[in-house]
Image (cartoon, rainbow, N blue to C red; front, side):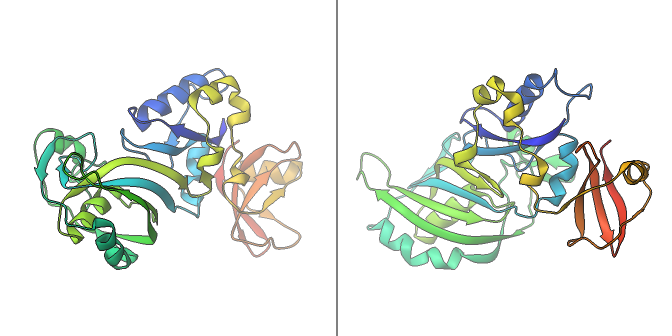
Length: 296
């Protein structure tokens, strides 16, 4: 098994649970006893949207995916802070919302765009001293976390609703950001910047690198046609493909350097044999092809 699935994750289920469902769907087609599953960026249980998953040997290709940008649409609920910074947490604080929150927010958006640092939330999968933060949070513990560099490429308001005293003000935004950015933390920081507290009400990931929402599939879609759901590595990682003859592919499979007649553009290349089977990824050094990841 070798490929990717652009899965649509619904809210209320974990990324790990969906990975297990995919393993069950592909159980009869996998050559491995237990199909490897790799997430190209997980989503919180309350979030929904694009959840790219690598199947089998494709898990070894994840580090080669060059574009790790993420795009999200989310709602910022002002005046209410929760323990998890999203709608799934308990309310821990409420504060008045300043008048004209949309105007105030528009005035501060620019300060969040560009390279900055962000402290991961306690309810996250980041490890501190070998322990997942969310595990510590479940035990009621809070530990010091080091800021991590992130980049916000764009941040814009889509629309806003102000329900007055009955319901908190809600502002819908879209953000394009680097891998490792926590939208929940961004939401808290945005609320703080206009003088109140806030949390994420809803979160939809619209894109994750080359995987986009319009091409994502539900679990039912995948189960209906598992083969058609697989995205070939060449459609995810934009590197050249070369085809080796019988002798060359045998040497490559054995881990030996293969001499090419002429150099191939790019550092990394996909390598296929005469039967068009993907046998691995090689690294070009002039006219010499060195095996880096061998699949067959």
